[in-house]
Image (cartoon, rainbow over all chains, first blue to last red; front, side, top):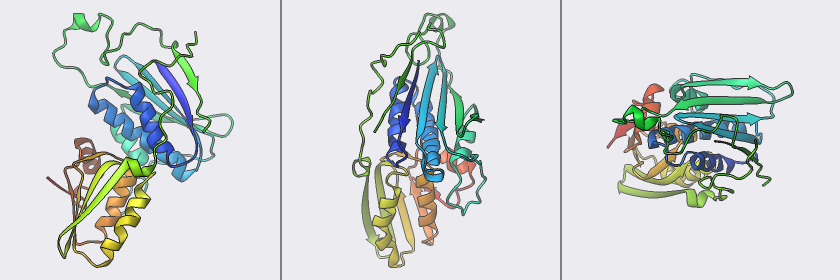
Amino acid sequence: MKLSRSFPAEASSVPAARRFAAGMLSGAPSELLEAVELMVSELATNCIRHVNASFELTIERHGDKVHVEVRDRAEGRPAMRSPAPVDTQGRGLRIVDLLAARWGVRYDADAGKTVWFTLLAPPQDEEPEDQRSSGRDLFGTTSGEPASSGQAQITNAA
Amino acid sequence: MEDLDAPSDVPEEPEAQSDESLVQVEVASPDADTLVVTLTGELDLSNVERIETDIAPQLESGRQRMIVEARDLEFADSSAIALWLRWSSQVEHFELRNLSPLLRRVLTAMGLEQRLEFGT
Protein backbone atom coordinates (compact mmCIF):
# COMPACT_ATOMS: atom_id res chain seq x y z
CA MET A 1 0.00 0.00 0.00
CA LYS A 2 1.46 3.30 -1.09
CA LEU A 3 -0.07 6.76 -1.06
CA SER A 4 1.22 10.27 -1.71
CA ARG A 5 -0.19 13.64 -0.88
CA SER A 6 1.02 17.18 -1.44
CA PHE A 7 1.00 19.73 1.34
CA PRO A 8 1.28 23.52 1.04
CA ALA A 9 4.11 25.52 2.57
CA GLU A 10 2.30 26.48 5.74
CA ALA A 11 2.59 25.47 9.37
CA SER A 12 -0.75 23.65 9.40
CA SER A 13 0.78 21.14 6.95
CA VAL A 14 2.85 19.72 9.82
CA PRO A 15 -0.11 18.25 11.74
CA ALA A 16 -1.87 17.47 8.44
CA ALA A 17 1.12 15.37 7.34
CA ARG A 18 1.00 13.46 10.63
CA ARG A 19 -2.71 12.75 10.13
CA PHE A 20 -2.02 11.41 6.67
CA ALA A 21 0.75 9.15 7.99
CA ALA A 22 -1.43 7.94 10.86
CA GLY A 23 -4.24 7.14 8.43
CA MET A 24 -1.88 4.93 6.47
CA LEU A 25 -0.72 3.14 9.60
CA SER A 26 -4.01 2.34 11.25
CA GLY A 27 -3.70 -0.86 13.23
CA ALA A 28 0.08 -0.58 13.46
CA PRO A 29 1.77 -1.02 16.83
CA SER A 30 1.63 2.28 18.71
CA GLU A 31 5.40 2.31 19.11
CA LEU A 32 5.82 2.31 15.33
CA LEU A 33 3.02 4.81 14.76
CA GLU A 34 4.43 7.30 17.27
CA ALA A 35 7.91 7.09 15.78
CA VAL A 36 6.64 7.60 12.22
CA GLU A 37 4.46 10.53 13.27
CA LEU A 38 7.40 12.16 15.00
CA MET A 39 9.73 11.72 12.03
CA VAL A 40 7.10 12.90 9.52
CA SER A 41 6.53 15.94 11.71
CA GLU A 42 10.26 16.68 11.73
CA LEU A 43 10.67 16.40 7.97
CA ALA A 44 7.56 18.48 7.30
CA THR A 45 8.80 21.09 9.75
CA ASN A 46 12.16 21.21 7.99
CA CYS A 47 10.48 21.88 4.65
CA ILE A 48 8.42 24.72 6.02
CA ARG A 49 10.74 26.32 8.52
CA HIS A 50 14.04 26.06 6.69
CA VAL A 51 13.16 26.31 3.03
CA ASN A 52 9.52 27.42 3.13
CA ALA A 53 8.62 24.83 0.53
CA SER A 54 5.53 22.81 -0.19
CA PHE A 55 6.23 19.12 -0.05
CA GLU A 56 4.94 15.76 -1.13
CA LEU A 57 4.67 13.03 1.47
CA THR A 58 4.66 9.40 0.39
CA ILE A 59 3.94 6.59 2.79
CA GLU A 60 4.54 3.02 1.72
CA ARG A 61 3.59 0.16 3.94
CA HIS A 62 4.46 -3.43 3.20
CA GLY A 63 4.26 -6.09 5.83
CA ASP A 64 6.31 -5.01 8.79
CA LYS A 65 8.12 -2.30 6.87
CA VAL A 66 7.20 1.38 6.50
CA HIS A 67 8.96 3.57 3.98
CA VAL A 68 8.39 7.32 4.07
CA GLU A 69 9.52 9.99 1.63
CA VAL A 70 9.25 13.75 1.86
CA ARG A 71 10.01 15.53 -1.36
CA ASP A 72 10.38 19.24 -1.88
CA ARG A 73 11.46 21.43 -4.75
CA ALA A 74 13.75 23.73 -2.86
CA GLU A 75 17.44 24.19 -3.40
CA GLY A 76 19.86 23.35 -0.67
CA ARG A 77 20.96 20.36 1.30
CA PRO A 78 19.54 19.27 4.60
CA ALA A 79 22.05 19.10 7.39
CA MET A 80 22.00 16.86 10.38
CA ARG A 81 23.49 18.92 13.09
CA SER A 82 24.54 17.89 16.53
CA PRO A 83 23.38 20.93 18.39
CA ALA A 84 24.84 21.74 21.75
CA PRO A 85 22.30 21.23 24.51
CA VAL A 86 21.69 24.97 24.68
CA ASP A 87 20.81 25.25 21.00
CA THR A 88 17.13 25.31 20.28
CA GLN A 89 17.28 24.31 16.62
CA GLY A 90 18.75 21.63 14.39
CA ARG A 91 17.22 18.52 15.90
CA GLY A 92 14.90 17.32 13.14
CA LEU A 93 17.22 15.03 11.21
CA ARG A 94 18.94 14.04 14.41
CA ILE A 95 15.63 12.56 15.53
CA VAL A 96 15.20 10.76 12.20
CA ASP A 97 18.71 9.38 12.53
CA LEU A 98 17.93 8.15 16.01
CA LEU A 99 14.63 6.42 15.24
CA ALA A 100 14.84 5.20 11.65
CA ALA A 101 16.27 1.85 10.60
CA ARG A 102 17.70 3.62 7.54
CA TRP A 103 17.38 7.10 6.11
CA GLY A 104 18.91 9.20 3.39
CA VAL A 105 18.56 12.04 0.92
CA ARG A 106 18.13 11.82 -2.84
CA TYR A 107 18.72 14.82 -5.06
CA ASP A 108 16.63 15.26 -8.17
CA ALA A 109 18.18 16.25 -11.47
CA ASP A 110 16.20 19.46 -11.32
CA ALA A 111 15.92 21.43 -8.11
CA GLY A 112 14.55 19.47 -5.26
CA LYS A 113 15.31 16.62 -2.98
CA THR A 114 13.73 13.69 -1.22
CA VAL A 115 14.46 12.81 2.36
CA TRP A 116 13.42 9.23 3.07
CA PHE A 117 13.44 6.83 5.96
CA THR A 118 12.54 3.23 6.59
CA LEU A 119 11.26 1.75 9.79
CA LEU A 120 10.48 -1.82 10.77
CA ALA A 121 7.68 -2.81 13.10
CA PRO A 122 8.91 -4.26 16.36
CA PRO A 123 8.62 -8.05 16.35
CA GLN A 124 5.29 -9.27 17.59
CA ASP A 125 5.39 -11.52 20.61
CA GLU A 126 4.26 -15.09 20.74
CA GLU A 127 3.00 -15.36 17.22
CA PRO A 128 3.76 -18.74 15.67
CA GLU A 129 5.39 -18.78 12.28
CA ASP A 130 2.51 -20.58 10.59
CA GLN A 131 0.13 -17.75 11.44
CA ARG A 132 2.48 -15.19 10.05
CA SER A 133 2.39 -16.81 6.67
CA SER A 134 -1.37 -16.97 6.50
CA GLY A 135 -1.76 -13.71 4.67
CA ARG A 136 -1.94 -11.28 7.56
CA ASP A 137 1.05 -9.15 8.29
CA LEU A 138 2.07 -7.46 11.49
CA PHE A 139 -0.33 -4.62 10.89
CA GLY A 140 -3.32 -6.90 10.60
CA THR A 141 -3.80 -6.16 6.94
CA THR A 142 -3.83 -8.83 4.32
CA SER A 143 -0.70 -9.02 2.26
CA GLY A 144 0.13 -10.53 -1.04
CA GLU A 145 -0.01 -7.56 -3.35
CA PRO A 146 3.09 -6.91 -5.38
CA ALA A 147 5.11 -4.00 -4.09
CA SER A 148 4.28 -1.74 -6.99
CA SER A 149 0.52 -2.05 -6.89
CA GLY A 150 -2.08 -0.09 -5.03
CA GLN A 151 -0.41 3.18 -5.75
CA ALA A 152 -2.60 6.23 -5.76
CA GLN A 153 -1.65 9.82 -6.15
CA ILE A 154 -3.77 12.21 -4.18
CA THR A 155 -3.06 15.85 -4.56
CA ASN A 156 -4.29 18.31 -2.04
CA ALA A 157 -4.53 21.54 -3.94
CA ALA A 158 -5.35 23.61 -0.87
CA MET B 1 -1.70 -1.36 -12.19
CA GLU B 2 -2.97 1.78 -10.69
CA ASP B 3 -5.71 1.80 -8.13
CA LEU B 4 -7.00 5.28 -7.64
CA ASP B 5 -9.32 4.33 -4.84
CA ALA B 6 -7.76 5.09 -1.52
CA PRO B 7 -8.13 2.30 1.02
CA SER B 8 -11.05 2.96 3.31
CA ASP B 9 -8.89 3.46 6.38
CA VAL B 10 -6.99 6.34 4.81
CA PRO B 11 -8.62 9.73 5.28
CA GLU B 12 -9.41 11.30 1.92
CA GLU B 13 -8.91 14.83 3.14
CA PRO B 14 -7.31 15.40 6.48
CA GLU B 15 -9.25 18.03 8.35
CA ALA B 16 -7.49 21.35 8.40
CA GLN B 17 -7.28 21.98 12.09
CA SER B 18 -6.61 25.31 13.63
CA ASP B 19 -3.94 25.31 16.29
CA GLU B 20 -6.61 26.26 18.81
CA SER B 21 -8.09 22.81 18.70
CA LEU B 22 -4.72 21.07 18.51
CA VAL B 23 -3.29 22.18 21.81
CA GLN B 24 -4.64 23.58 25.05
CA VAL B 25 -2.61 25.15 27.79
CA GLU B 26 -3.49 25.60 31.42
CA VAL B 27 -1.45 27.68 33.82
CA ALA B 28 -1.37 27.41 37.58
CA SER B 29 0.77 29.03 40.21
CA PRO B 30 0.85 27.00 43.43
CA ASP B 31 3.20 29.56 44.96
CA ALA B 32 4.77 32.86 43.94
CA ASP B 33 7.91 31.22 42.58
CA THR B 34 6.37 28.33 40.69
CA LEU B 35 4.58 28.16 37.37
CA VAL B 36 2.86 24.94 36.34
CA VAL B 37 2.01 24.73 32.65
CA THR B 38 -0.21 21.84 31.65
CA LEU B 39 -0.18 21.01 27.96
CA THR B 40 -2.95 18.98 26.36
CA GLY B 41 -3.09 17.82 22.76
CA GLU B 42 -0.39 18.24 20.15
CA LEU B 43 2.46 20.73 20.14
CA ASP B 44 4.35 21.48 16.91
CA LEU B 45 5.36 24.23 14.50
CA SER B 46 1.74 25.20 13.93
CA ASN B 47 1.10 26.30 17.50
CA VAL B 48 4.36 26.52 19.43
CA GLU B 49 4.65 30.26 18.85
CA ARG B 50 1.18 30.96 20.22
CA ILE B 51 1.87 28.92 23.34
CA GLU B 52 5.16 30.73 23.88
CA THR B 53 3.42 34.10 23.51
CA ASP B 54 0.66 33.03 25.89
CA ILE B 55 3.11 32.01 28.58
CA ALA B 56 5.62 34.86 28.17
CA PRO B 57 3.87 37.32 30.56
CA GLN B 58 3.90 34.65 33.27
CA LEU B 59 7.68 34.40 33.05
CA GLU B 60 8.33 38.13 33.15
CA SER B 61 7.74 38.31 36.85
CA GLY B 62 10.96 36.41 37.48
CA ARG B 63 9.67 33.05 38.62
CA GLN B 64 12.29 30.55 39.64
CA ARG B 65 10.55 27.30 38.97
CA MET B 66 8.62 26.01 35.98
CA ILE B 67 6.90 22.67 35.74
CA VAL B 68 5.54 21.47 32.42
CA GLU B 69 2.95 18.75 32.86
CA ALA B 70 2.93 16.58 29.72
CA ARG B 71 0.65 13.78 30.88
CA ASP B 72 -2.02 14.69 28.34
CA LEU B 73 0.34 15.87 25.66
CA GLU B 74 -0.39 13.43 22.86
CA PHE B 75 2.30 14.67 20.52
CA ALA B 76 5.36 16.91 20.61
CA ASP B 77 8.29 17.25 18.22
CA SER B 78 11.49 19.30 17.99
CA SER B 79 9.51 22.54 17.84
CA ALA B 80 8.25 21.68 21.32
CA ILE B 81 11.71 20.62 22.47
CA ALA B 82 13.07 23.99 21.34
CA LEU B 83 10.31 25.77 23.29
CA TRP B 84 11.07 23.78 26.44
CA LEU B 85 14.74 24.66 26.09
CA ARG B 86 13.91 28.35 25.79
CA TRP B 87 11.69 28.13 28.84
CA SER B 88 14.33 26.25 30.80
CA SER B 89 16.80 29.04 30.15
CA GLN B 90 14.44 31.54 31.76
CA VAL B 91 14.05 29.83 35.13
CA GLU B 92 16.30 28.35 37.79
CA HIS B 93 14.54 25.01 37.85
CA PHE B 94 12.73 23.46 34.95
CA GLU B 95 10.92 20.16 35.13
CA LEU B 96 9.14 18.16 32.44
CA ARG B 97 6.62 15.79 33.95
CA ASN B 98 5.13 12.60 32.53
CA LEU B 99 6.73 12.82 29.13
CA SER B 100 6.06 9.95 26.71
CA PRO B 101 8.65 7.16 26.63
CA LEU B 102 9.50 8.01 23.00
CA LEU B 103 10.29 11.64 23.79
CA ARG B 104 12.23 10.65 26.88
CA ARG B 105 14.32 8.39 24.70
CA VAL B 106 14.88 11.16 22.14
CA LEU B 107 15.78 13.79 24.73
CA THR B 108 18.09 11.42 26.56
CA ALA B 109 19.89 10.54 23.32
CA MET B 110 20.39 14.25 22.75
CA GLY B 111 21.87 14.73 26.17
CA LEU B 112 19.03 16.98 27.32
CA GLU B 113 17.76 14.95 30.27
CA GLN B 114 19.66 17.10 32.74
CA ARG B 115 18.49 20.37 31.32
CA LEU B 116 14.90 19.29 30.89
CA GLU B 117 14.70 17.38 34.11
CA PHE B 118 12.21 14.52 33.84
CA GLY B 119 9.72 14.20 36.63
CA THR B 120 6.71 12.06 37.30
